[in-house]
Image (cartoon, rainbow, N blue to C red; front, top):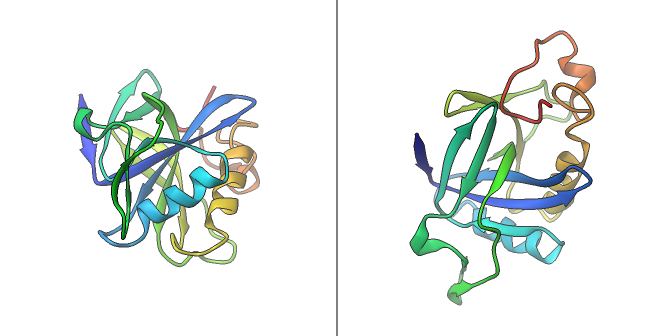
Length: 163
């Protein structure tokens, strides 16, 4: 089963391969703006504005709907072509908002799977750097080193970066 979300999807290549971050927020919150800044910082575009997501085994994947593939909105300039990955595994959900200084672990449910979720102000200048670090630190254990100290008491959940 495939669902279409009002969200962007960008990916970062790590030693574990491509890792996708699903960027969610209200219309005009800065999803495309964050994606553009991440692209300048070495990330790759997968989908802008709409993302089709599906589960396969214990993993969640995403891609752009056909008509939107390889396109990104640049506010003030329009919708422009940009090289994109055809699809990638989604390992992190990013929601727009004001984060707590030391947040408790959070998870979002997608297509019956659970993913680690972080809150970032999408228009904050440090958001791409924070997102890079979150993606790089996922994967050292059942739910990843990024939140390992906090999730030690919780059972592993499929869908994130569980081996």
